[in-house]
Length: 242
Ligand code: ATP
View 1: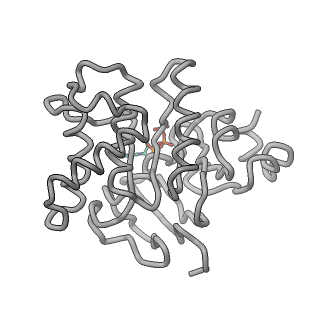
View 2: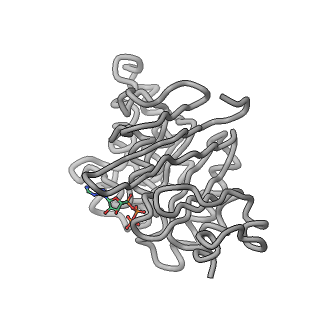
């Protein structure tokens, strides 16, 4: 375990029958990073997020957060946030109740003070610019707003790292630009790292201060955005940058 490493994956392998989704993958994410994870369809991006979040376990290898083993821990004890591609909100709950749910579920038995739940929920809604939308139903708001509710639901638990699965995929160009600005603003305000999965080179290079290229279940290259762009090191990563 190295000092200053937030997340470390060592030799992580995930098999589905004969399919090798992740093939002995190694990756270190330093503290305070916006990491873009770039890969083509089928490269293993979603599988990697699911392993980090704890929805699945690796067949081999280990995952560490701040030097502590993650594998084997249930998702709600991992201190990791996950914003799903389809947002996965509860349609029968209000915006505020969706956000509060993140808190109740994550901290069950620890936080039973309704006033504190309300306060933290309101703060999370402010972070994503939805402070006046708490009472709305999630069916009454736009797709871009739903995504920000999903982000607030994760941020309210104050995770150390937030996993974003194709966060711009469902948005039109205007909403995409707005979400990019908001993610940057949130990063400036909170001490939180992001792991942003995308299949778009432009998006990976624009958003990430570091870009990791995933190809065939392994990390082909990790670098800061600028040097990755100017000096792709091997054919696997060069292919993604064309
Ligand atoms: P996409 O961008 O299309 O979602 P991805 O990079 O997220 O792709 P994964 O979904 O992680 O890729 O899939 C990696 C490989 O593992 C693919 O070959 C996929 O078909 C396979 N795979 C993923 N999940 C399963 C599963 N539950 N059962 C069988 N095969 C799976």
